[in-house]
Figure (cartoon, one colour):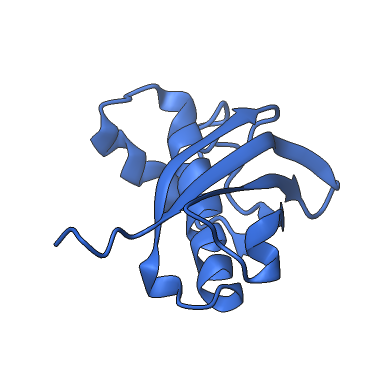
Length: 129
């Protein structure tokens, strides 16, 4: 689980998105600011990577190669998110190419905010530096 801090909305101004809905919200006080999708995906990715480190044998040899998902509902400052993960990596096995599935839920309403997520992993090629 992760709680979205109020400063998270400001960081994504650096991505070049100056839409006030991501910083001020509709009321102008940041309480209903919609979190940038890239930020939502960043929180999900960080939790997925922690999960892989915890569940996978030799996690240092594993590299995230791609991630994709569908954003289905907005995420707001103060939301508490829960990320559900399932797939082969949950069983400590990682082949050459392995993908896991995920979705992100808003804890308070139990709504899915990110769905059909897929994170692809690959074992680090020992022959490359």
